[in-house]
Length: 535
Image 1 (cartoon, rainbow, N blue to C red):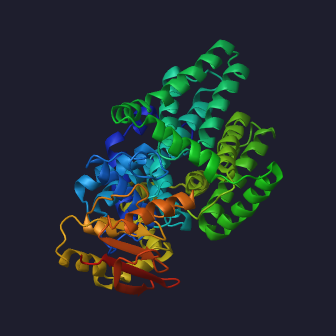
Image 2: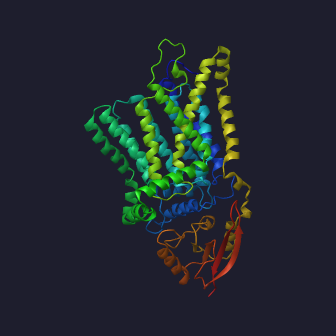
Image 3: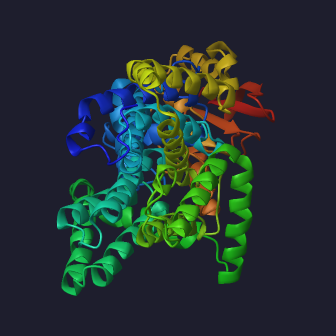
């Protein structure tokens, strides 16, 4: 365990960058292989959102511009991630799987660094990393894999690390401009993936601002830091502005990504209604993600007790000091954690809309539950430490790490709600039946439109590029969406129509050529395929 009971490990002992990255990469690969439906263990990622991101991402390589040529509501970096994924594979989710492993690796590396801030041993953060990953990514709110929340998650975790590190090790000194700038850059990436998690960075910068004023009495520095932070955020907009500027679509970006998400997607509710909605949805998410919130609750209880103990004087003559099992904690550290978590939750739900995967970023705070357990285990070890026992643990650390990775993998297999989908085969999926029919039709570069639902995956498996702005049926401006889609069937622009759940309407010039009911794990859904009649 290499525990030093008198002091924390030195910086040199902790800056084991390559080993830490490799360990998190291995752990991330194991977890993602089990938990995401983009993995090769699954026949296909059936989530319509992930398919729409991949459709937009690979369409960017073919000259189409998000918001201008294709309507969807996530940030440009989300589509850029999927664009890179499509370079690996355009017809499968292999590329997305690789990108998810990278995102998971970086998130776990941040979690490891956070644990190193509090734990006294070299080994314990590594031992706990697979457990943290298992708890985070087996949650129901992880969903099927590939969400915007999943890809912005590492940018939140590294922001959490910077913030916790500052208030633990440097406060009341003011936060350096370099760290403030880094925080702004991280916030900018979050904004340009999905800005509903920006509440975290509002609290992050607010804590820096008031801590500089109250702790360091550096009023001027506090205000300058705000501009440095905003400058960091602004720098992340530059690639997008260049891209949209070249393609004359800056207005389209602002209208779709900013205006529609803020003013049309959110519900119009009073403050009281929003608070009631927040309470209802948070209780629902806690019930659906019990292991996550149990871990967060353990961390919250432990850190609260640590704060209480910080106000209780300790007998300096005691042989066994309290800090053997209780983390020494400053009030400002506790306030910082509460602010980060509180504003993250508030802004996620403030719009009055919630879907299963929305609260996934909250899962990052499970790392503090792991810190609590790890610190108690270290205290127990120090209490019963014997030389022979110490030698055994020191020599078997690698074995313990691998054992924890194996346990986390097995637990993930039994806990992840996605695992039942592994039993499906490609030949079981309606997608591949429809694909085979379309490819056998002999139509070169078939034009497809997806009606009565989001992108069901037919664009992906046929590697086709949408021809309609509303390439899938969106939930905003339904009259406009349906009118635009019907124009493409009325004028017989598209060769095939796939309809989800209900038969398509206004397809008199099309023949119903395939109809298939699909029962993945829940309710049955019927898919319909129409082909344009021969002239």
